[in-house]
Image (cartoon, rainbow, N blue to C red; front, side, top):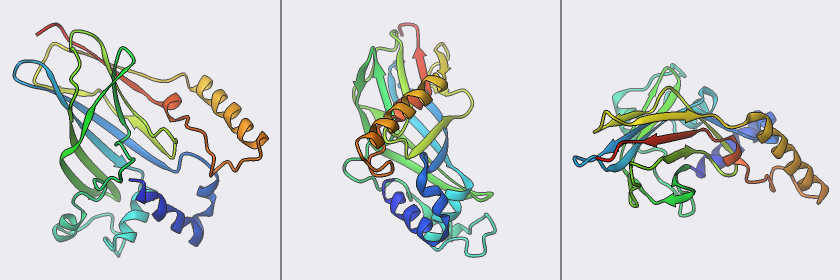
Length: 219
């Protein structure tokens, strides 16, 4: 996804310059589905992304799709779209973070994915496996955020569960006021040190992250 930044920078240069002076740049609605295996153990997570209409338009145009801006694409174009955001560079880890009691849980890269473009909006869905599965009887957490806050992710609806029906799923919002205050303080520090806000933007994405907390009875 970091290659998208290059696309956006180009678009700013040709007339979207107002986007270049604030974070975040991209807005993504997220849906999650937690997958359990036949023994009731956490196996993986399906992660769905729906990109904001402006970014969708810019990226689709850059790819040479939907040249008439109808908001729809043909089946042939849809085939060309497949996996458009799955070619991750080496230091990009998917912006999905799983933890248990504060310790990170390793996730695989995407093992399956789907892509679409409908009503002027790019959408994708991918499955990541839990390489280091949590103990489902102790609360564990999934948070979707970009540490650099270049992209803002918002969880839509209630995350779904596949393979079990006895788990409790809760979504917690961040303390928006506190996050905003910490961001402002961090930006003041950057400016005070003579830094460039865009180039030296602080890693505050976790402050603005919603958390999905999962707890299940012992299988």
